[in-house]
Picture (cartoon, rainbow, N blue to C red):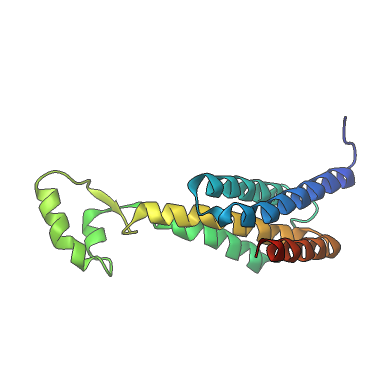
Length: 166
């Protein structure tokens, strides 16, 4: 089946965003909001799918205000900046790293540490936080792109499902 017009492509993309949003909002409370790693993986994949579909939506990309685009990109980029490797001399001068400097000097003197460290003290927690934000960003972008009637449908049914689980 070949889709010919851009309005049909946009409608297909909008329906895909709507269906994935329904799946994400229905599955999240059922799998305990991603408390297990396998459940979180499912939510992250759905979030990445929503973000990808929202980024490729041809008609609605111009309707999103610039400040919202900047905010969403900042939420993604700032944790990534904390994961960039820094030279040891810069890392030691960062605020909050004074407690780790002495023990790090001992480790470096024995040759067990890298010369570059991230500005995040616990990098895997930063990555985990970034990945756990993906479903939230995906639903936020879906709410910006979808028409008001579909958003109301999502909110009402999410409230109904939430009350069934409690």
